[in-house]
Length: 175
Image (cartoon, rainbow, N blue to C red):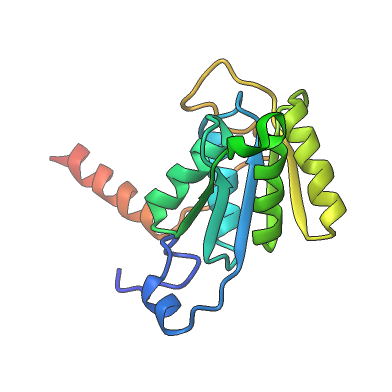
């Protein structure tokens, strides 16, 4: 297969193009600490591929913020982490979120439907007037291979790879 890669074929960040034209489009990622499975990774990876050049998130919490850092590392995206600043004491969490909101252009908020911190971040994002995508995911007892609920039938037409695999299978069964 001699196929030229397109943006949709290669999810990695194109750092060479970015260095030539560093117009940034920053995705702020907020979410619940209770969510850290593959569904979160997939949602963030899908969103960042929509032309973003940076991922911004909170550094300390696990869950969605930690997965955002893994997506950045995996695909080579520049990552901007905001830390708690204890100068603000009990307001440190709110201040950290406000800093991400000021810096980011758009947001992905992944919520377990219960987290008060994520609910507060969503309110701040809405108040900012900036574009956002909001996803609610149920907590999962699994950390791997949880997938999404499949609601539609898969495409069963054979594509090029399926045809190659099928031919290889036929050849091995004849030998």
